[in-house]
Image 1: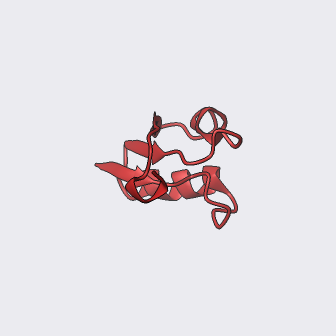
Image 2: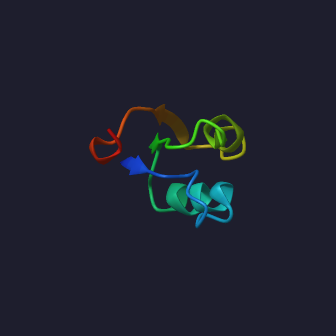
Image 3: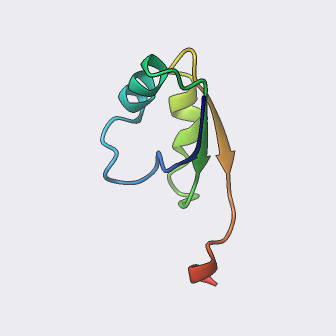
Length: 66
């Protein structure tokens, strides 16, 4: 199963690695992280901490931010 719209850099996500562990336990194998802050690139940090879940970065401009 793939989570196609995660926001791991959201400040409300206190422990992204724990969130990925729970996702993996529920059957998630891949997470597409919609990164919104280049200053907080957590994708690489958390992907190394959670075995079984591959984290992919998706960067772009939100239509409301243009």
